[in-house]
Length: 124
Image 1: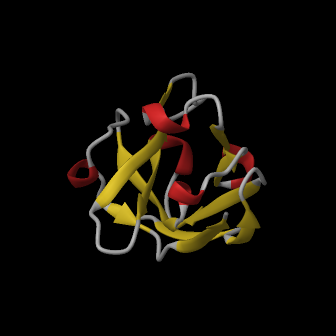
Image 2: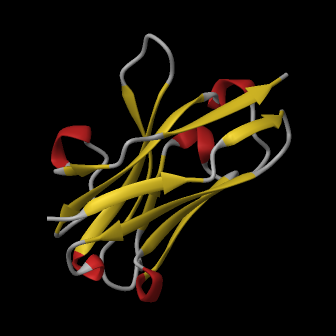
């Protein structure tokens, strides 16, 4: 099993930046593909980004965040990051990180382990 704890959320003006972190514990972190999802009020969890296990050679992004968000991982620190630049009001949501064994996925149901979420608020 793996435990996940997100941090780095906050209030930012449109056009600003935030970096989210997700610290993992309890298992061999590099064996897990990692994903970021978000949930806006009244909406489902939406896929944001994913990164492959081990070296993180492969990444995948929601179209609307491509070129603005970057997912990365540091296996030595058991941490995955989501660098968010040029934030927009529509990025306002609770952001969750998630982990799954083997290959990465865009599907929420594919992930077995979830953090508690961190709030990102973007003001216009």
